[in-house]
Image (tube, rainbow, N blue to C red; front, side, top):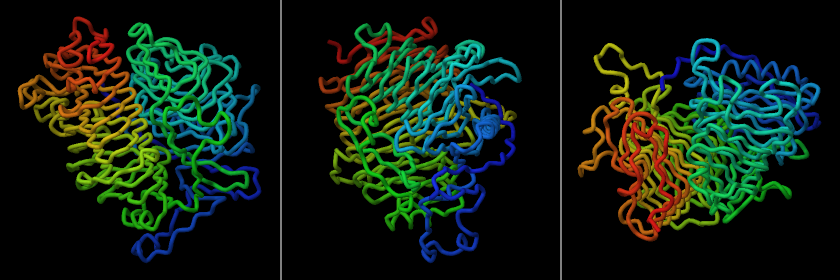
Length: 639
């Protein structure tokens, strides 16, 4: 769907707040991380950058509040930030907002926070219970028409994060919104380590022009009240607790969730429930210890787990002092970043857009790369922005990777293509909230977005997106319609290729690539929730036909020689708006062998195009005669 060109954003004057802890010094935003003279010197000649453990400089796009900050000040600043970011879908602005341990707002004066694009809101406690927001932290429908409540929906509410805090929903009269925290979001939105009480959590906004549509989403490691799902097309909630869950649309997956609904009536409602998550590792998070020092907690991997990690104390894992990190800004060269990684530093990417003309290389075991505020790496000159080597326990989290205007072979490569190194399955390479874009804010070109060659890798929530809309600036006067220009110009051949064995994905969202969206070549793959939209824009059937004559490419392909694979809860959607006559033979294509098992899968027509079968010639046809009505297959192979 077309998106409006974002209005220019005026800069917001911001002040980083401090705690009452005597050891924490005041933070002044806008201070450069290093002097220009140091930037000009060769990276190898620069002395190691020191980090104050009590007062790390996260740069001008990070705001830190303390309980001493007047609520009125916080409210005014965050209202201004939301006004700046609410329509900034394709902007370069990135922001992170953190709350030091304590309580914010009250029943008499609640703090209502609205979260816009490229904004991270998080607590800095060791536990979610250390930071409490009395009020709400919310996302509403975005109204795309000029003024008023015209064309209000949540379908494009992407790229925002909330984590590591408690929300005590206040009962103050808010009209339609009284007693509920609204989280009406879609892909690339992460809710982690939350403790919500005092009302309901609604994943749809039924107060702004009705519930409309939403296409989310992801929750992990959270304790929640009654959850109103409503208009969400798909959702994964993992390793959490819920007091209740109501409603569903097409594909709702619960993995290791205490209080999850039973799925015995599938597909009415379309619930998929796994008692335990086969493999999980929670995302690293910043926190401040009792003495006021900043650290990053790196949770340990868990097998066959259930419920939250923090119910009985500190989340299992290790803490890394902030002094062991290289805190980068977009002004830092890749050479400086790679030198720091080679010296054994971990990496924090502060909020911003980083132009990357040569690969950032993560080689050492147990290295942590943590992006704040949706830090974004953009390929320059056809570079591979990020390479992760075959080494145990590397974690990459909170990073968005964009294709550039020149063709990249891949945007993130995990493991060498010819490596036979055996990695520790108890300490997997982990990608958490790592997102990919081809097109949208600018023209993008890549052959593959994510390539996983290493064994024993965990992908915990990703959105791999070839943009179906954006502000790329196609020429309206060249005689070729916009969709045809996008097909020829924003090129992404394959979304995800998995060559490694024993790779697990929890929350795999892949959309709009020009051949296979997901191609799984490795053995013993395990996927919990898969969501795919086929490309909107093939100009002709010939453009969407395989060399062997098969009509179209399945949204999920397991290679013919694979003998073991398991997928739970998956959907492939078709919306061939550029040419509604286009046909796709199958939503899923897998080898016919007992070891390859698909559980609770579906296809659906969104109003244009046809998918003839769900999997391997099995399942009903999704077309314009049954728009919006899924075609389900409960289990494949058939019983």
